[in-house]
Length: 540
Image (cartoon, rainbow, N blue to C red; front, side, top):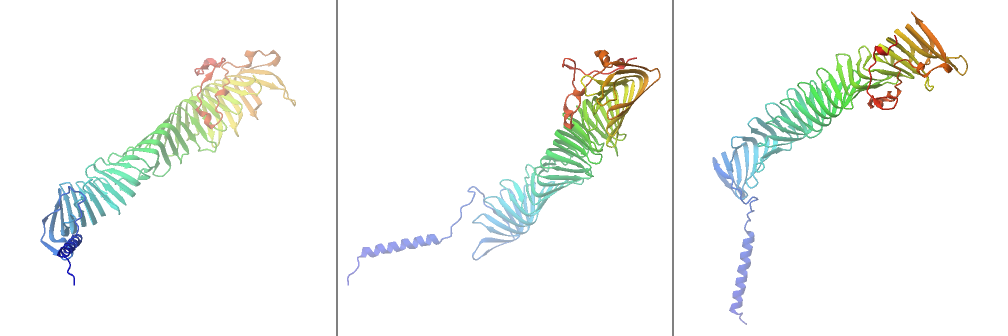
């Protein structure tokens, strides 16, 4: 039998020892590297007893446990301290203190010394001087100094109570962010929101999603803006809506400055205000509103709509105001006033509509039109009766003109005081008192309605009856004078009364034609300044 060389046996022995050494190294437990290589070790400051259990890596701490990590003390009844991972779990009567500002209480805590993340569960209360946060699941990131919950929570300060499904609080900036089923409760109002940011120091709530603010005075719909819960000042964007408590009035605008305490609102851009009860709408690119006095003002492309009667009134002026009492409203319009109804249109310098009496007061170069009739004067009062015009009272000076639809031929009536009465949207009767004059084309009673001549009358009083825009009866009394001139003998200056102006080009043709300027034109078509009528226009 041949013997193996001694050197070969020695080599195999060395190889066997190397394999055994590698196996021993691989069997040793590996220590995970800390997430933060610069992290400090969680320190055990106090425990009633310290125990170890077989096959369990943690130290078991029992009774009056105190742990410390980078400026924060953590107290509990018992804990598991995992020195290898620099973490621990705390149980029962958990309390976490960071300086003299942050105090957190709960039933359970998992703390990671490497990430400085505290996970607290069940019956949690986080206190920051005047703010308290309640939840059952809170993660407090000490690195970012943020506490956030994700399964419902409530934040309370001396002014408000906020609840939501998800929330986040920064103890340094005092900013709290809430999302999903957000509710802010104040003793005077409640805010329901999708997303809300709230600063516990300034008491300002930033509205970041669809929200409703409800109070005794009304409610607000908005998706973007802010509300100061301390001063009740609000700035609302993106077509926010403010409703009265009975939903009878609404204010809408691109941007609204509003104070719930004073009830004052200021609107910038596309203001829309509607009174559903009194059936009125006020619009403009700028406006103000007082919900306590129910006063509204609009300017910059301002117009109002009164739909309290079956024929709506569309009114424009440089400035419009609405004043209301418990039942009725007044609409006041100033400068470049134009209005449109199906049965009547008009222009003037200023106008006042009194809903209680259903009267339009037109002042300053007023002109009104009804079908082929035009009436002008120094002041015109238009009386409305439900859906129709009842009468027009022209004061101080009056001139009524009827277009005969024949070039250059106009029937005319003038005087100191005139009343025009309407039925079924048509002129039926005219009464003139004082310095009455008329020019009227007389017709031959034949099939072709031949014009005989122009009849001119002068008297102290005059009355005319109409049917289908044609004169049916003329009555003059007290010092009357009348003369008829055949057309062939008629001079051009005899066909018009003094002060004659046919202003049909100013007439609003439809409801949106109210925005044209009231610029009067002379014979050469150059723009002239509006003129005011006076007694000098009356023939004595």
